Length: 223
Image (cartoon, rainbow, N blue to C red):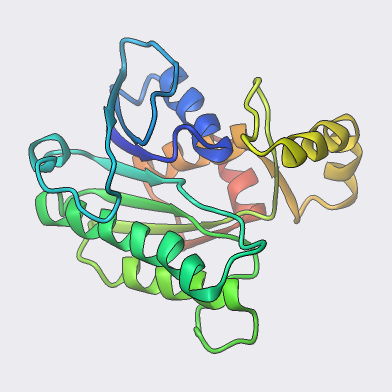
């Protein structure tokens, strides 16, 4: 399976990248990044790209790919709706449209979030924008699309957040994660589980197009 990965320098995408590199079902990973990941691996090809709304010139690299794992995203904290919409909807949909134009047989997996509002009419801004993004991607003529809606994600395998105070929080919670997993299994997952679930879903499909945290953990456990 040949994969396109967005967000490889972020926490979630970095975790997904590690799982892809370790999984025998993945033959090659094309990572579209703004800066190098710092990872060297025979399976990994990196393309440093500046404009994530325009992929002219990358058509040949995208052609014939089997799956896209879109893990690029930002926190809504401190952002206006206009800015959040651009960094969430505009960037994801631009990538999806560029990919479907040359690889319509691809499976597209999008990291959304628990609480996403698919009606696009709720009061919570980030949930409306995520819902709009999901709907736009699902409307495109891919072979299949899957929306991943994780709740809390604990980084594992040395993956770190680039935001210092986020990483401090993850470091504290990490010590208690086994207890948190027992107390709230429907709300928590890990970067390992997200990566393994994405690979499994791209390889064999899933019964529903939307995967909540429990689905992600279930698929990862049986991948």
